[in-house]
Image (cartoon, rainbow, N blue to C red):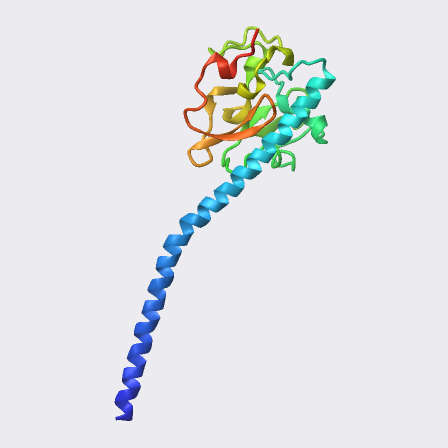
Length: 213
């Protein structure tokens, strides 16, 4: 009788163990997506902080250069180079530098863009953000034959003008935005506020991307 009781007790213990394992598996399947969303939300917040610092640095640059926006083009000049002094960053920098892994890198960007920087060794910097090059005379057709910069006085409604965003190209945002954060991206607007916007907003129109000439 005692032997039978022992076997019954052992059998119930195995069943209980399997039940516990099943409950744990169910909890993991429920909690893991929530944990991943929380991690992505944290990365999105860090990205927004990066853009906020970039915006503050651009504002200081504009104040020092009589209202002119930084220039950034395919000829080895990048906006990051112009505002680096306002972020206590010294060139030259490289892909393995702390700078390249810091403020100009979105934590959700697995393949940040490597950009050549003329006149420096190493001659590259990695970035995750794109600059609205319409602020320096380009157009929505990506025509860079006129690289004359614009002044902040030409932006009449800064809260509706895109300045920087998560992007595939360092000087193009209207058609190269990168939706890294829950099917959306972070945008730095002309009044230096940052917001998350879903894919499709803002529309590619002069209202949001072209200075008010």
